[in-house]
Length: 186
Image (cartoon, rainbow, N blue to C red):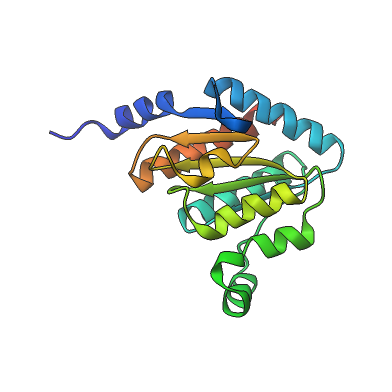
């Protein structure tokens, strides 16, 4: 008999691993609090949130960017425009679809969320590296292999120890919502 999917997700949420620069492990709740503090600090300095992801992770990026913009009044954007993606992928290669807009639009101090279930999508890795080059604060969300390349590229990194896309994506959304909800004042 299959395990109750809600219990499976509850177990997974408890197992999320968080690290800061250089792979130092920290408690997930502490990492969320650190991210929230940084978002508030950067928003108070008129910095923006940039979110990128592929597929289901792109949906998370759009959802959370909208929440930042509408509910928190923090400038935020997800690079999911069809014309932008198809133009850049056709002309420069799909591995550049996020790093090029980050190079053109990100400024030092912005926060860039890089979201990838596998943690090995080349365009997401390039985005993280470009964001760091621009002087942005990077928050990564990944899953699948504990040795994925994205896992240590951020200033704060969240890793979901699962190989199930749905579970990883739902957990990533829950982490992002925990940040938004902590900042939201009703």
